[in-house]
Image (cartoon, rainbow, N blue to C red; front, side, top):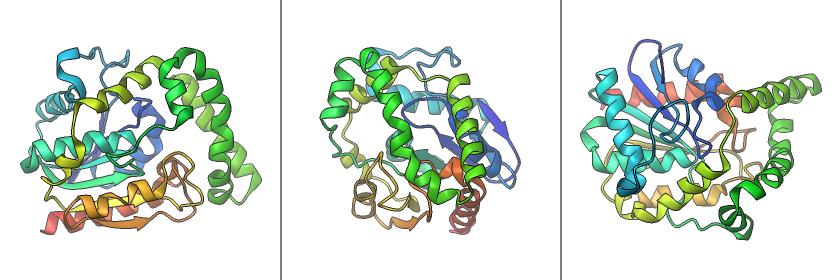
Length: 260
């Protein structure tokens, strides 16, 4: 777990790869004006927390409960990135008094179903992982070009991101398990229980090639009073390609939620 900064608390929940280090720049940027907390999902080797079969998807809400206790938190702005947004939805529904504000960043809708490519990956995650990794650059290239007009900046970012991935490697098996755990909860029903101020952040539709923007925008009708913002010149990884801009968006939302 990383816990930095002072001010209203923002907890940032990582995506399906499970490692907070993949969004380090975003955590550091948010921590300049807020207390920013992030962590790796249970099951990762650096957490010493295994997945309890009987808990299903609620392994992740139990982990958040422990973080609240460890950090002595009362209420926070909960920010879930991609798959992490699904965890944030579940937690906000179960513990509304603890969630002052909810932010969902490029989060797939509860009704999202894996396509044939993802289904193949789930059937044999270890065998398919080289192909998954090989396809990632082509999926991310358009938004990297949009975020960094200068070629040198693109190369620097690509090197930095690759280093981050190597130092905090993802586990294909754990990623597949996290996908399967979604079957144990009804997140669409959970959305109906959420009354916290909610901000939906997406990249541009043509740039997010990981989670369709239309899928994330489902939350505008699924969560009462939710509103959205398009994070321009970004796709799925805007939190790390443009961390300072992301932190500014978060800061404005936190200030608004604190005033309610």
